Length: 227
Length: 404
Image (tube, rainbow over all chains, first blue to last red; front, side, top):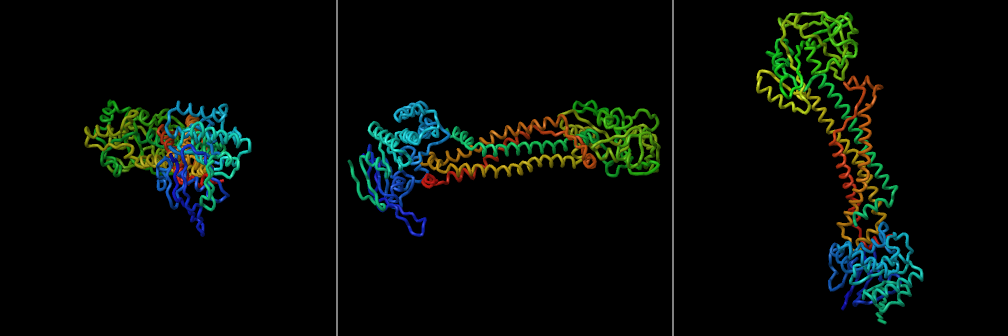
């Protein structure tokens, strides 16, 4: 069962005098429960592809389907609601809400989804336990290390059980130990909750852990390997 | 959660929030104090004139005020005044015989309005005795006592017990005069009382005016909270031959002044709140620009534009909610303190008195001013938040997330 389907996705930026073709006809399908890394050199279009797959940006050409919904021409307002219900994001810079506690950060998306308090509480504590930071529930993100903050970010992305979690360079700011811990946790969540993960990365440690590796170069898929 | 985040957000940059809160507090305080002081000037000025001169309403012969002809008196004036005294809306009434003429001292002569008063009822209506600054209220001098204002005293270069001569045209059209001795000197915010009026006993004036006990004016003091219009309607129904007017008709400049001062509150409010709006816009814009990436993240994960907009709006309203009560409290304390002790403006008394103002100012504010100011703070906060909030919702999440 495919979660993401991209057909001939192209993206051209016309902000400069010379148009920049970031994606030149990407075709790919991501199945439920995959643990996929999109890799390639800087500027190959990894982040652009992830933004388009996540409904944060529109393709210039082509078609994108997420959870059987065509999001290609969806309005920005509808895309926000769609992302809320279907997609989890993990960012390179964690991007947690600094004024909320770690538990509140995890609850945040469930709250936007109007889930009841008990469900939110239970799920947030369950995830905090799985991430190994239950004792940090009432602390603020600023009181955690980078690795721990990224674990909160992963928990936030997983909280509402989205169809897919898109992680843009999730380990770029982490040391080796934190990276290993985070990857173990994500692999565990992938196995236990059948959560679908798609990373954009050039971190070899992530690539080693991925079950499928899609390599981009100059905006096109040059290899797609499943292990 | 949005409310919680908004509340916590305002304390992220405490210094910046305190600057905005401080400016709102200062603005609210300044607005209340300025309005209180202006009201104080107006209320004391108007109260002086209404309580000591005009009263709430006056009755005249319809022809009298055209040229103050002595023969246009109120028929059965004393009887009508007595009848009015029994009305439940009326606190007191008095009658006056009014003749324009000249007053002369050995050194100088000037125009004057000679007011023959019922000395007992006059104090009930105008508390004329309370204005005596020198001498007495018609005691100590038996024959033809006269009370004049402090400015007239200076003009005539006279003092208590000095002799003055009043001259006027009597009911027969003949020039007549009478000698009076100054028994008291009055001082008031009313320029007329200070400079123009000369008060004599009605019976003394009757002897030389030739109109006997006839009166030209009935002054009416109503009970508190009584609408003067009810007295007017009632009196007009009973005595169509007379002209009865409220203080607003007698002194339209006072009514205009009252309305002008009320408008001043709004003028001041617009000026102060406009300045505050720019301060709020600046602060909230900084807050939005600083959190560009975070706002981008919120929109990326599914927080819709309405919620983002509301969050910025609520943050600003919270700033107002913290500042407004403080400003109101400090303003209220300031007004309360000075309304008891008064503000001594003696240094400027000469200038103030020439405009009819008292040199001790008692600031005063109606309760509704506090309500109006509170509403204006929140309206200002919302107006100040509109542009920053709009800026926040216009951001592109992709660009915002990659902003350094």
